[in-house]
Image 1: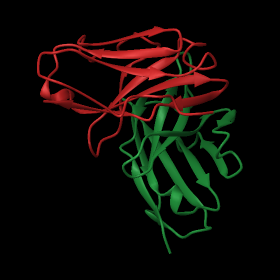
Image 2: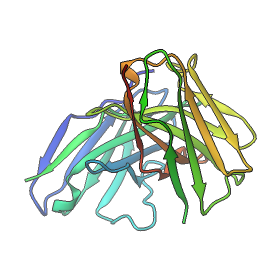
Image 3: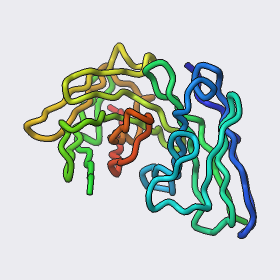
Image 4: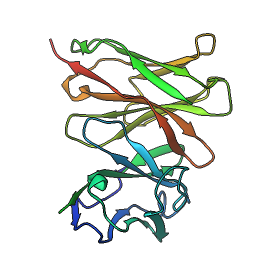
Length: 109
Length: 119
């Protein structure tokens, strides 16, 4: 089982929108609607931002949205804010196991 | 409010067994949720270790399965992790978390505890 593939880094200016991709296979991302996204600020625990591909937990800004097409899931953040600068990880279920992506560092310019 | 707190030695010698406990408060560990461990080596990404149900059903990461043991103590509302034969590559921040099995996502996390493997 290999980790899911994410870009190492993305950047955007305040107010802009960015998208982070998460590529897997038909055995994980493509095979189940069990993709989640986590935000992690330095020195902090990960925080759930999106679950089951596109659902937001209570309290998470609607600027965060998720989607999936085939074996690739995506996290979009609109109206970028300075506080969005963090590492983002995708996760997917596969055959009783859980895979994480390698993480993407978001820089708000 | 569900809260999780990891505890255990911060320093473990190579070839020894790493032992951590996760105390759960604000929620019964016997409720319909699973409980998991995730680790993060310094400067690296997240790695799933395993998840366990209060009844004892367990799933481990295949890459760690031969060295991992997880257990639940419902009387203390906590669950535990043991990782045997540790080496420097096991140095990481270890997180415990609640797993919502219906959607397979971790919705509550502990703050994490750094475990360093060194002589």
